[in-house]
Length: 504
Image 1 (cartoon, rainbow, N blue to C red):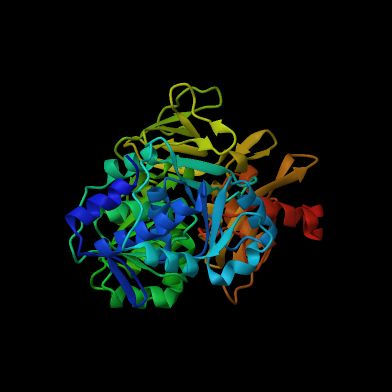
Image 2: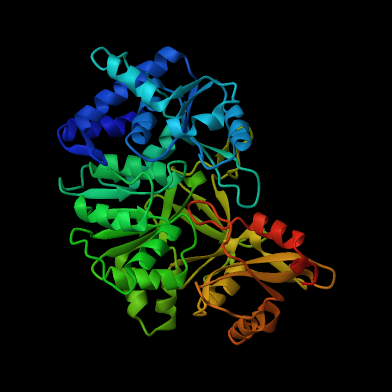
């Protein structure tokens, strides 16, 4: 049993319902399945052991995912924004793969040794095979379905192996089959090489919900497309929501059909979330927390929780706007200290998770699950008395200043509340006296001017003196992934290389 079962069930239940819409093109579930069989047949004939895809979100993405499953080989979408050398290095790690590349990125793979085929050429060959496709390959549920490379914010990217059983467990425990109405439509604009890009495909197909792809995100186009296509739900990453809020200004959005807006992929700045909740007053917000290694979502903060937190005068309830919510069905959690002991509510520790959707397996190095199946997320977290989870940062990001462990998020959450601050990242840099010094890298609002002492005073008024940044550095932008995760190692390298850092 493979993820092909998801498509088979959708076709069986709703063959004539629209499955995917991209610009002026739409395919029904039946038409989509025929395209999958055609492309899958070409992949079988090629003898490829895997598919690497270098391209954007659109009709080709879900087709290639299911066509790879049809051919019994894993699918690996890669980041088309990487430099040619980095792409070649990643592709070289996928044994026996064929590289499928959109025309606009063809020049970046000219140096790879693997066979390369353009997306449009592969799909033309697939259309020729539609009348007489080869039989689908019988796939073991424990075979790899997807290999995704992590974003590498603190280290080199790792290839995460997601098996068919992981993805099926995720979908079947969190989504009710055929639960979408015929009018339901999800607007998708997350990157194709992110786990959310894969999760949205399998979950929406299982629900039999139409997917609307916006290949190149633009805030104004996102709003107009949601309105034109009558989107009922949407998935964005924090940087996208920030741009949408900026585009709307103080206005309420006019998308009458939109019922649900989910976000994830990186920490959401509270000012952005509050502004979005006010801009979309009738929309239910969902914070979906997950990792590549967990086959997407493992915890959710639901619509009522968002609105209750926004409107509450109770500090504990209001704080939940920064929570990732509670675990989804089938997921167990533990928060452990450095010695591996579970900690009580309110105490910080590392978040460990367990469940049938959790992979925890890396290409070339195997599984990192412990003997009882628990996966160490490397996220520092705590749980409040009512079971709401809060992520305070990554283990790797922790700053040790004078022997005290400091989570950058604690300082970032304060500074970003300053009206002149657009975004901020806090990092630790080597210091002879303290071990590490705290440096806040700040992006100001357009036209704003501020001195570091003004912001240090603002932070000092809300934080202990040991958590007040030793230095504040101003930059035009923060280096980040397309999902909004801050590339902290790039920031540290930049600071260490600058004359400003030497006096910090």
